[in-house]
Length: 253
Length: 233
Image 1 (spheres, rainbow over the protein chains, first blue to last red):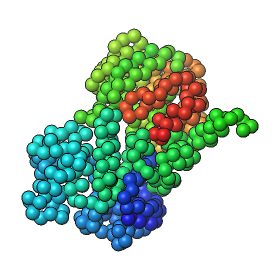
Image 2: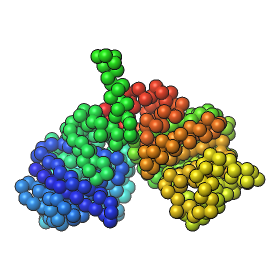
Image 3: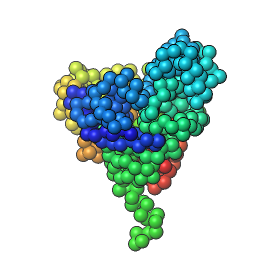
């Protein structure tokens, strides 16, 4: 569904995204992880047209969309959310969601219907008449997802929807994300909360200093020496391997 | 010496620390570990009086110091070396060091200057040089030296190995161990798990704003939960 090849972007001398290639299959729920400053959000911005890549290509549903504008890419069915959520304050939750719905629905009544439908998917249907600014952090994160979902995306890119949530709020968000996927929307998410990523996603790519250093299932990722070094620091991969070897039956086993 | 219980803090409505419990005794070197973005620096900000907690209690040397200002905490001997060094680039090495002893231990500045240059001989060679012209490793030494000028009872080091070459990282951890062996109590906040656990006697691992794992540093190195705390599995 999404084919990224050799994508690169530098800011001055910093190679924020460096020769990244990956493929997202239709219907999957996958994730992009990596330490702070690894380039995850920049990669999202390149995919959705907020930045233009220096090199490489992005193809979506078989069409080249490299360098297209965000609105054109959204109209084609790929939509992102933002880590720092900015609802239209002073407008109701319903109006906020309807803004997204208007991408494909010029009629106000249609957009409002779509917004109500989406509000149920994200659990905001009891708050439709509330000022968006009065929502809690968790509520605003849901609203951010709702605005994107209202555009009827085929591929939804979620940027840290769980950041800033407490453990019980995180537990509540996980089924919401699964429901969205089960309703037919392919999902690529960036997430910092590792336990959440590992329970949620079928496959992850690990980005470090702009480059992909690993890809695979949560199990494979967590055993990957390059990933362990990126997260726990130098020397830890060898140390953990030695421990696991001795735990598996002594030095001679 | 330091007792933190149920500490909560955040920015605006976003709660970062969700009830942190941590204790350390005089003479300890304790490592506070954890992945990016779990709240380590926020915890430091609260301990140093730069951010007010919304709940919980901090006791230092038997006194409740919760919510005290940075200045009041420095006066009590709780000194932090911030992440990223923050030396005064246009002042000389000597001036930077003297400023460290401006508030506390002012009468002992001459003797402490001598002591700091014994710990960090490289600073002695650079006394009149502007701090901004030092290498990253030298700036880190200066930032620690500046803190030592205040005769800390507890020294908090935030990511002292950040951005240093592997060889310098080794040297930095050696120096931290040496300062502890000479009697200084240290809270070491770090991303470098292996080196930190090798020099610490106790360690705490933070995950999503709370301590998820703690114990003897040597035990933690072989604890399967350590990997889980970072990688979620």
